[in-house]
Length: 414
Image (tube, rainbow, N blue to C red; front, side, top):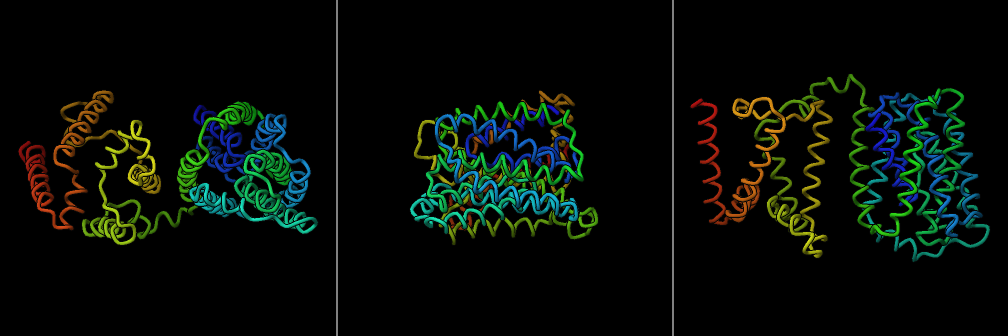
């Protein structure tokens, strides 16, 4: 429950900051933190998002940023679509709904990663005029509402672009108005589920309280945080949660197949791992004219506070991708991260703090060695040798000799 409450604060903050996005996290939070079945999680999320959106709407409305005319028009159509979607959900298996929700999350994450350029492009287009504009708004509301009712996502990142393009709004007004639409659609979607799904209100109330607090904080922070940076970071988090939803939606029979276990559970043969790494290196060189190097990315990450220009570098984001890829692979394999250190366990025992200190010290030594050598094993051993750099061949030979000696000392000599 503690984890669910902590993540609920993030859900509310996202709604207050962006006018959407928090709802896309609610179903995974309820599914994985509280172990709800998919349909109950979707119904519960609709109620949580509806109340939280109303709370986030109040300060925006007081500041005069909400267009009630357009919001009620879009929201009324969305309510009809959401109610129909909620009723239709009774006929669809929960796993299929969760799979649809995962696709919705992927689409949302990718759209967010496109950043502010897409928003600027939309703002430059003139919206349709008069009755045609309202007809488009109603049609978009019906479609977005149906998605909300079916999969429990408030659709904020579908609503905001529609309000900018069709309603002729600026981004801040669109974000504020989207909260009104999300609240209306989410209440309607919940009504559609209420006839066939039970929601535990005693469990919902604490989550709603924390999410409302987060929404208030989100509105306050919206004046201080760069929207582009927030949108990109949140997008990556959404994509990871999408991977969680995909894993949950996979039928057990598929997870037990030889192909699934070969890809996600068993250790890949050396040639497959080598081919995968080579494809990344060659792809970066040929498509992006970039050289793979992890230590350089770590150096840029450490230097970033003093050198704001490095914030545009691709390498720190590449490091984030490596970490997230490891998380996703671990989730699909069913393995949980541990501090098992092989032969070193015999030296440090079972003490977790001591293991963390050893890992910290090892990381410092690895970083120091990479700095002295002008690159790490990936930079020298993969890219440098492929480019024919003499220094990389020497460094790689020393890496290999050091690895052979250490392995012999711990595994053979011991």
